[in-house]
Figure (spheres, rainbow, N blue to C red):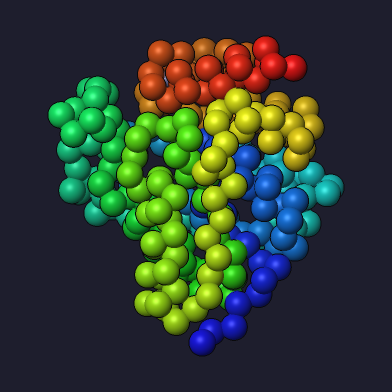
Length: 235
Ligand code: ZN
């Protein structure tokens, strides 16, 4: 069995609020934290720029910067080639007959976590951190706790390894995600998430709201804005 470093983590960083909060969570716990992101023909490249800006800001932080290791950007063109989702084409965003939004990309998180495990294997990294959540989410079945646990077993069997998949936000709603950011990195981290992270499905960065940039009306903006309002009114 391969030997993995227990103080080394790899975080799946998309450039959104959840993955940015998970990156801070990992930087707070592990000595070395690497990041991985994926290009898959997303219809908006804005999140790729956002993740670069987030990494640059954290690198400049005197406490967290020294712990931040290599960033890996992996191209997965097969996901958009398979297509027919509102994340990789101009298809409309709505709930289809399966009960899932058309932004669902079948297999996406399964592929991402499997590829992240392959990178972690090469890097000798025991901990893999992902911001999936089934508390306050879009209903994606590959974000569910059971899916992640089952995949951890499959990956560990398939690679003869002992990775731990961490999901710090699994049982945390969007209000508590803001609260977690505040507790991890204070107002500086909350400000970084507001200004640098990106959640909006439409890729809109022309309008700045108290909770960040976005169209303000798509399902992703709705979740982020509602979480912000619930958090602010709870203070
Ligand atoms: Zn939006």
